[in-house]
Length: 248
Ligand code: PGA
Image (cartoon, rainbow, N blue to C red; front, side, top):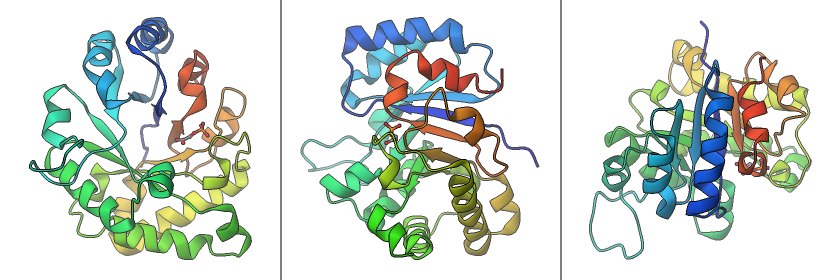
């Protein structure tokens, strides 16, 4: 079974309309021959302009969060239908920064994931352990819980992308080694097999995220279980194109 690699950028709370449009314009010709799926997950307010900027290219636009209710009295929140309205295809759910600063839990990750799927969006569900958890040998336990609770009740797991992002590697310049990333992602795949079905585990796309850049992407992407990357810092510059073209 061959899985199509998927490289997604996560702009986090960076860029403006002008700088975002400029970057997408420059990226378009550089990524057009990519053999992988390509997306940029941008701040919600930039979505309409970035969708326009990416039109006619192979760059899809994603969001960085979605509310779990369909609509209603949730001041400041954005619904899945609103994202769909603007042509959004992907949504990051449960990023460690949201878990750390915005009270995201495995339960809310689960609700958001189900809502996104219902609306026809592809969720990119983030999981990963902190440094303390890794050092205390709790990585598998943490992942077991995040996967079991976060993905509870999903009918077709193949419609979900999973991003393994060890929290200690995010924005720190400290990437997991190729072997560490491979070993943990293989574990996640095995777990998906247990929670869902062995065949689905073979088909589900699992990305690595955490200080992935133009220099280390080749080694990571060469690992048999790593199907792509969720790229933070390096997606704010043309290095993103080098990562997307990792096989060239
Ligand atoms: P980074 O971020 O590439 O800057 O480490 C990755 C992420 O948080 O998705």
